[in-house]
Length: 213
Image (cartoon, rainbow, N blue to C red):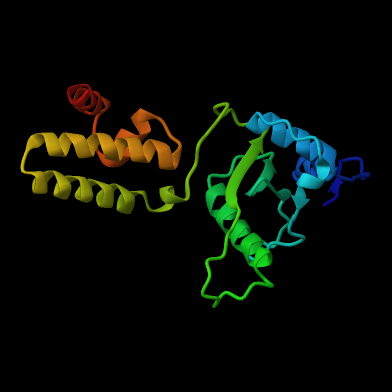
């Protein structure tokens, strides 16, 4: 909207495009060579043949009504790389919806009612962030966080039930260690966060782990 000054002269406001960085990222890594270099840097690999990389970037994601940045298949992995100039805690959900469309596209010519197992590339999702809001260098996020209370309750009840069946305190401690280790691995988080999810303390976990040797 134009702003009219006291002098009567209209001043046109300069529009701010918050997505220009995302478009630059998409444009930059549209080239297979650069995309392969980025993949090698992130995975400590040394691929040199650009033909090993199959780009499958969605032109339009149905649910979000926007394009995903870069997606491709290499070495039995389906990788989705996104760039964000503003922090968004809903990236795991967005990634889930993107991958749903990517896999739908991947198997569109496959007979799903076949009696043989359909082999799929494993999903890998990375979001690059360079916004103004200060964040940790690396943040692990998970789709499980959208129902954290359910996950916490289910893991806790499974551990308690297994411990009770064993009929001894060692069983509960063993399941605590197993559950914390499982959360660390599956959610790619640290010990403190895993213990918080399970309603346990780091001290209790470390004590049980040291006891079990």
